[in-house]
Image (cartoon, rainbow, N blue to C red; front, side, top):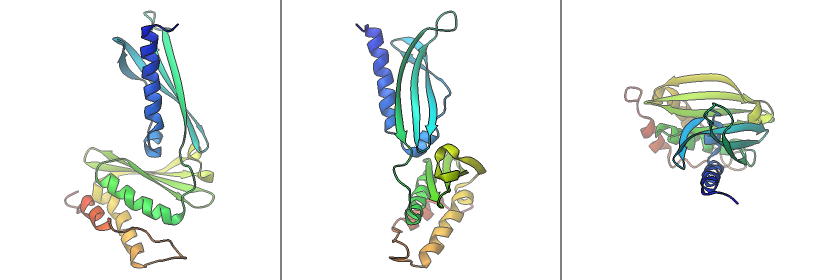
Length: 204
């Protein structure tokens, strides 16, 4: 029979597993295995994430560790979740829509990512907010598998320096007015708002 302490710890682990299951693909890719200090049942502990990638899925183990006075051993409580990093391949038209939405998210200070499928390989564009600046990490993924992804470019600058070239690309692409069946339409209703959020080179 579980003690109150064990019930509390198992509940803590279960809630962490539920939280991970609700994260976006972008947030999951930022997850690290570094332990963090937590307090559970009025006791100091370490929370670890054990990460293993399987192609399009990521298995994340949750380990709650209470060190012993000797510095090793101690109580451990475990849980885990397997999450899909994507449920299906994104077509080029969807990538254009995803890029527009990612630019707005990044301009407003949220992390965002876009996967551009080139059949069979692909690129991941990941945007991170670093203080008042934006960091872009470009990864190449052989066979479009996230577990194969390797950094090919990393830059950091103001919102305008990093995001404005992508916005200009979409604005130029919009001017061609592609339509079915050549290219399913992209919702450009937010493109002006995205430009405003990015700001000018002097403001950003």
